[in-house]
Image (cartoon, rainbow, N blue to C red; front, side):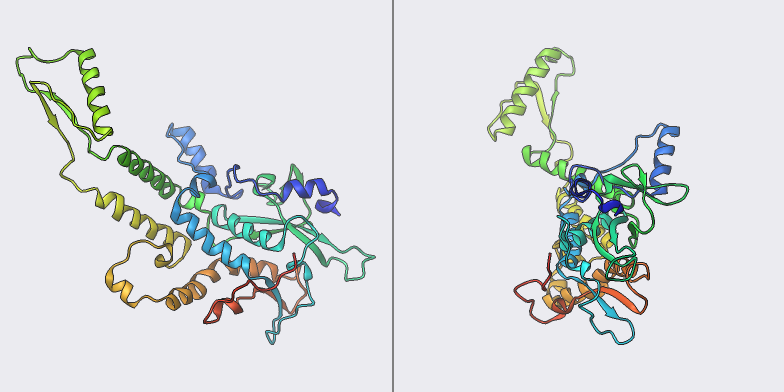
Length: 355
């Protein structure tokens, strides 16, 4: 039974814990960053999944990729004629674990987006089963905090114990996870949001109170200066009118520059960066578009671009791994049933799945 031998372990390993950082267990670049940081004494620029999901563009991109693909079930097809074989591999659309197939697929894509790797536990038929020995009967996605890779053998270690090849399916994504690939972009987005929030709190630019008496007779001492600054800061944050004592001049460094480039154009540029990192059409992340782009962009165009150019990029690695002979018999392949997504009018319900 292996990883299916204890329901308590299944409940623990298959749960979704949003507070735990997610990173690729096989990320050599991440290890190199840590080593370089230790040797050079440079602070390590790392981000967590929780921080990444605070970036609206990333949250929207994740919803488009993981949400849409999880909505459409995985099916088994005959490789020769493309016929759908609903009777084969029922575990793809039904499970006896607390984790539904939709949740399994959704959080698998979440793993691939943020960490670059995902891992499923499998329950296979024994020698006395009614089906061929080794046939997969059930499966669930193992949360990243409970598994990693042995750096020497590249075997999967679950909760400190090495799992056999028959117990797990290791799924490699199409690229490194965002937590490694886009750490600086994510940190910049967080910093930009923080700066924007601070500016909203204090919408008037930085102000400096400067003595105008060059003789120093009216130059306030430290305590007087702090009191004056505190009083002025209170008045400008409350939107009131302040009073400048004689001999004090008000300066506003940077007031002549516009914030539009940073807080509007900069945030739109961030959405473009995230779209490129996730291989998504930028228009779907709903940044500001020029009039010309809006004129020739339609809902059908966006939907076709998403289906043809983006979803396949993320779905292909999972479909290819599940199509290997240790998962389904030779002559079979696994793919998402995107029939409803390709229709002109989106149906009012998801394709049938038995959870």
